[in-house]
Amino acid sequence: MTTNEENKLIAAHIIQRLGEGGLPPEYGLNRINVGNESYLNVLEHEYFQSLLKQGSSFKLVQGYFGGGKTHFLHCVRELAWKYGFVSANVELSPAECPYDDALKVYQNVASHLMVKPASIMEEPQLGVCNVIRHVLDDKLDEAAKSSSDPQGEVSRWIMTKLARTWCESHSCRQAVVQFALASLQNNFAREQILEAWLLGENIVVPELKECGVFEQISKANGFTMMRSLLQMIVALGLPGTVLLFDEVDRNLSVSVKRSHIIGDNLRQVIDLCGRHQLPHTLFMYAVPPEFMRTVVPDYPALYQRLKSPVPLSARSPQAVLIDLEKLDLPPEELMTNLGIRLVKVFEDARDVPLNEELQARNAAVVAKACAEVCFEVNHRRMFVKTWVDFLFAQLADGESEITDEQARELLWSGQQTLTESAEAEDEFDDF
Image (cartoon, rainbow, N blue to C red; front, side, top):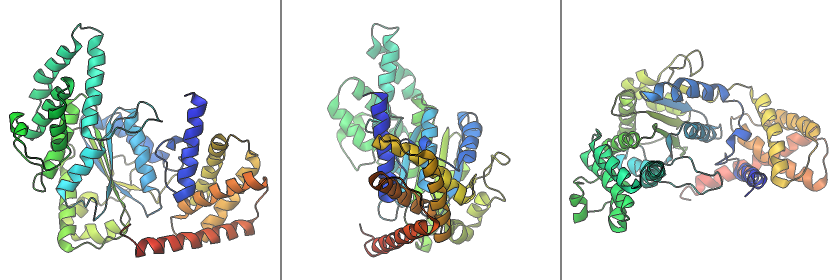
């Protein structure tokens, strides 16, 4: 596939994701990202280039629903890949992955760990076992350059280095070591058993004890096993791990008991950051602002750790809070710049030229109308959906200049559609 073909497919992916649901694309974020560069610059220079080489860090990402939390986490994931880190995007929700259930958190982390895809058009190879396979492939390629027996070289590395690394859980270390050996030796049956265990499945077979795996992963030891997994990621020779937890459920009204467990788990993570138990790890937890106002104050120990007079910035790189309501650009200017960038993406996706000066003026008009019509922060989602629809209309009907009144009418109709969609989601939240 040529570079032009790949660019066209990526551009089409961006337009489809933004136009359908106002959601951030999986790939190609650098083409449309605006407004959060100062946060990303601090994370790159202060953390990926320095602190994460010796320690770890916790960051609380704060933003309203539709305010760019998921988009920002995807940007951090691409930054992590740039520096060779393993990443895991985990969506937290009461049904699928509540943060107070250590087993489900472990299972979601283990099944979502991934390295940077070799090609942006490849399907992502998710799961801790695919990370191990990736390391083995690299080790075999490296050994083949200097040894006539690359498999033997890698096997010796596993037994003399990996098997002797420090890890909180003996069972976790043994599972990783024995999985690596089974994969290297094409022992498919043993490989599958150990993969199931590493992914947190409830599996009890004699082969596990033969491998030195004596524990089961459960609610009681889920977070210990997750820490152990992160320790083994570093032992495999990778720079570290970026864990991105995204609170996707809008309902924060959990029971007092569950809220207390969530608060206590977060406090423990913050305390572990910087210790050898959580090596080379960036831990991000994305929540709506209500979390800091309604949940955290009930737990003084957590509140003291999270409360900061200022958000993260070049002047306060140590701050815990990343506040997505405080971006580099005001809303209208941010949306205008985003619209201008999307014009170029749209041109690549549809393989058509547009009058970029005309569309830049149109972007400014639609951005202004969006800022006036949408009082909530989800104006960014409303803008990208409206703007993509507008560009398709310009392609179909011919390019023309939009008036302020036309832009407001366009936004009002879109606002009504989004409101109806939100009501439907609330009514049918099982879907």
